[in-house]
Length: 139
Image (cartoon, rainbow, N blue to C red; front, side, top):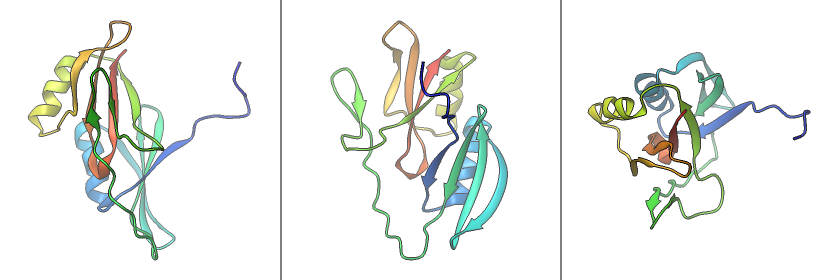
């Protein structure tokens, strides 16, 4: 059993345009903005999606963030091909194929198109703002 002292709390994203990024999660995934604040001199927006917290914040004074590398397809996987977080994932409870069609109609791009993953479940990768990659998996 894993350590019960730990509970997952949030994903924190640095954004060039926090309000636009937050609105993308609202429009594409139906996330809820639960707080719109300023912390350490930068906008900081708290969102809820799938029972988890996403925090999207702007550039803080003195920071000089570098652009994220785009996810790349390889023979049978995809990767940002750099150390650190590669992507985060959500289980989708519904018709993932239909949901991907809706996202595509809204202009969302898929660096990894809908396909059958290990174990036979459908999955894909979505390009989110700020170089973020999100894996969507059929529940």
